[in-house]
Length: 213
Image (cartoon, rainbow, N blue to C red; front, side, top):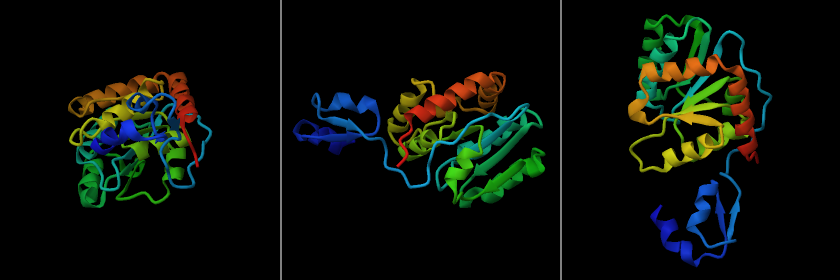
């Protein structure tokens, strides 16, 4: 943010997360290291589920209320082949369980206020739906999973820029929060379900961008 902008003309070396950051610093002084992430995130083999989709929904440790409300309704439009693990945040657990219950998911939905073993959850998913914080994007890419990202709209443009950076590389698709309706999310997921080769390509691209350790 502002601090980086102010000191950029004076630094001798800048370690950056995304290649787009290079333009803010002098020529030849940047090293793209990626985002520091916890240990345990490693590239995992990817083979999308036939005749269905295993979805992981992550809205950060506190959950994301708009995703908690839109994503279950979107998944309900896609049929019985959908299973979902949804990190909803502790404050939203009761509402999320109730909504999935109303939509008839039964055992096809596993609602968790917080996921302790995120590397395993990512590795088990066919696609990840979530926000686009730098750490979340870095973890998704480290494991190598396609993602549908909905950047948080009330914290400047940095999440949008994170999402756009990997979307331009073919690793993700992203929607502005205002467009992330149940109908639009269902449309995007339905398209991907019908194109398993594209899902595999997105996973490969994500993995190529990942920086484990």
